[in-house]
Length: 138
Image (tube, rainbow, N blue to C red; front, side):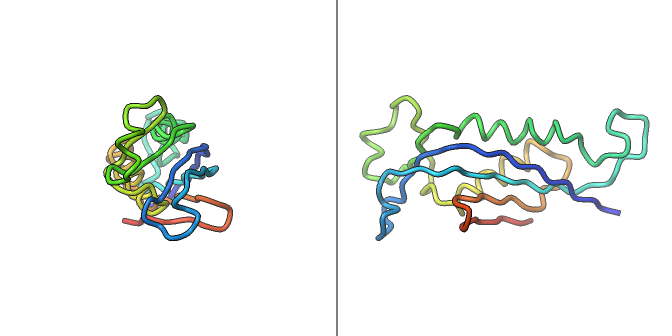
């Protein structure tokens, strides 16, 4: 029987969506909530994780890799016209895609899949505001 465990982390990050036609093209920030759902078998062995799919602390450690890279940073796409002015500045992270919730969820999904292997990451959610979030599923 497969079991899913879920954990989240929150962080504050600035970004802009350069080609957007609304106010999202301006420099601004959000309180993001990144959630991961991991699926696996409950261990029935003599390991410290007996009775668990994975220790929640290990999931937290994986989430904190992303947290530590993006928290209190400014995310910008490599094709953003401001990239030439901001790249190399302290706290600026240049991504190869626009820093939308959808793209951030995709980046997080790929990273968490590596960090939590051999377990299966089933879903990653990136909540940008309390009313907007993007999901990536396996």
